[in-house]
Image 1 (cartoon, rainbow over the protein chains, first blue to last red):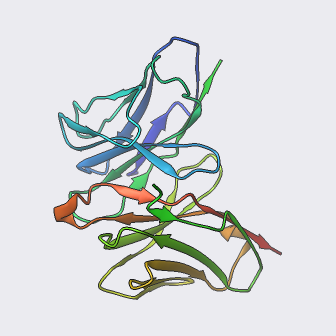
Image 2 (tube, rainbow over the protein chains, first blue to last red):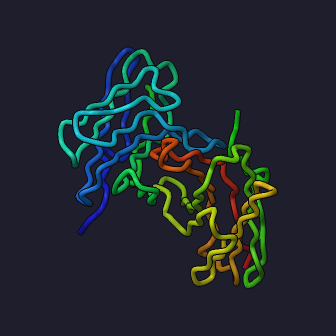
Length: 113
Length: 115
């Protein structure tokens, strides 16, 4: 069954702790994305990657880091430098650089204890 | 600066009637537009898209209209069904030679279908 999986569904972070959100896709898509959604707001781009071992900052990259060591995986680390990490995090992927649809995973809700 | 705007945070429509969701954009370079539907605590689901070379695209109950001169697009749902109750996001993309790898999203409109 092809798709995008995100884990965990809920994640709790203590003050000063780094946490990593997982995103895996078996669609053979080249590009992958991380977005953040806050209540009443649209989706804001954190980081994106168009090819393995390469990634670019989005609009709100501060306090986050990513890696793209494998085509199917694009984990997001929320560092202690991110002062307001509580949000719904969404991963997406797209087939290529062409204008094609991004497909989204089910999301991870991050809460700070 | 919000380049893609959905000025109506919410909309209520009777079941069976037409739902019209609106989206305005400010960047005239956008040339590809998408609508997504999102249920709470789930990822957005792609609904329909339109390229700027067209002014209308239809898929079943969903039709998207694009007015380039007004920088306006709309999503029509006919007839509206209870399962259409969700938040709808419009998104826009630049041409490939301007960096089409990113989508710019609006803030969403919550549609409620009244039985």
